[in-house]
Image 1 (cartoon, rainbow, N blue to C red):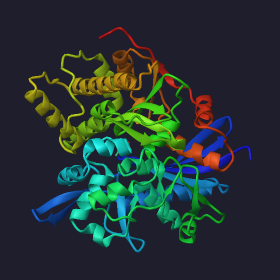
Image 2 (image 1 turned 90 degrees about the vertical axis):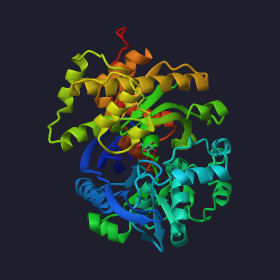
Image 3 (image 1 turned 30 degrees about the vertical axis):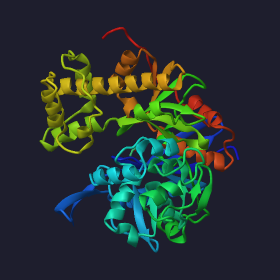
Length: 483
Ligand code: LRH
């Protein structure tokens, strides 16, 4: 068939959406079926140290948002061929006998610190890196599961399903682990692409808690009858495994050139690096805090996993909580015209990962470092964007050094590509042209893989990407000499 229609369910850490896409070998068009906020919930809990709170994902709200969007997609596209889910990395739900045990934890919940030490005592970080290629972030599934085990939760659960796999399970009743999202666990071998059972046994995690692996493009199964009823689908509707890690789907849909292109996938997080055929597992890569997550078709995303729009959005939320109305577009224009008289700060300082009063946290950083803090809101926005652009530019320079391959252009995709000042300052600070867009790269990457499975598209990653290049004209930002 020449064209086909598909639905992408894309969960980001701050919002989710269902996108209906029509794909042909030369064009892809999309329309939004639903968009819903992803609002984590803090809930009281007790442990040996007494009462505290834990941060959870609101699964019922996410599931409802997905079903509402899918229902609309089925109404608007009665010929809908398939649907697929992608989401942020590392988080999972625990199940027993097919039932979800409690609300899955948010990666920003701080319960893994001790678990990191225990895991590293069982497997030294250098060994873990050589096996998995994954940068040891405290949010990684491996440390989260070790923390659950110490609370006895893995004695109860029989399966852990990563977020997108959990939704695929609810859609189809099939338990799988898609490889791109599986790579964010730090339990997947970078060499074989299979679960590293040795890591599980050395850390004392039960074998069998992880589901069988599948690769992007595989068919998971038809939707369950109950789901078909809920969304009003009267025909056969398949669920497909795509690049279920949002970053993998976003990079697939970044209109990168065949050589010399680096990506910045900028949403809540900022993922900065290059796509490669092989992982880079050497000690310098580990020391540089670079990671090798899996992309579609067994490519590797050699990148820095760091701060993105979170720090700006959390700043805006702080102002809004204080009752102020914020117009980001206007603030960016004002920010562009303020003089940069404050010092760029380290957006990767771990304190900024926590939810809270971000302007106060930034001010505290500046006070500790004897740095100048801006005085107006517009100037603070400017400072945040300058600091993010600097972190991205440094990550790109490090990428080129680590791979030994020069970078000649940057493709910035995701929500950050809407922020022209960020794009321009990245161009200025890196000295490289920045191509911005598409904004919805993740959903587009999700749709591309579904279209290939259906036989609408054929070929390699480059062939799939060509559809994006034909359809979207990225906005080009030239580096300027201004400081
Ligand atoms: C970005 C992302 C990133 C990390 C984080 C937890 O949305 O997927 O790659 O895995 O979320």
